[in-house]
Length: 140
Image 1 (cartoon, helix red, strand yellow):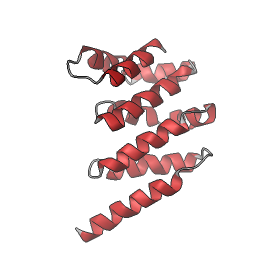
Image 2: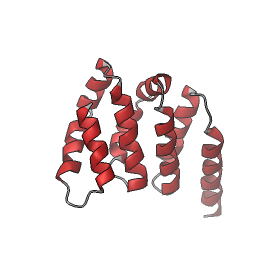
Image 3: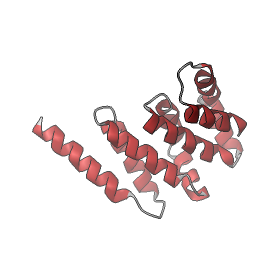
Image 4: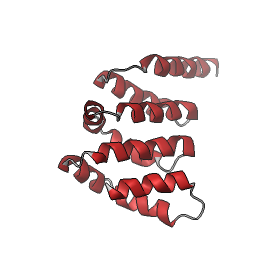
């Protein structure tokens, strides 16, 4: 148990250290791996990763890196997570799709993003912010 806590603590420290102003494909891949490995047992890791991906998606280079590394699939899965994760996941997907590049649109369609949007829209107890993000993704 102590080894697990050290690993998780080290993962959190690593995530914090990776935040910065420049987009580095290696860093994005490392954040994705940390979130994949530790996200289910340490929800704050996934939350930090979702926030990090949102920041990375703010410019075209970051959106290219996210798409190239297949982060879209992970983000779509995360739209069903707690609001702190799902809101940032949806916002990042909106950013990724905003460029209207054919390969990104095709990727979203292949990953059934539209189905996920309609799940959200049909839901009874969906926070309004999440519903807004889902509609924005649909509009793109």
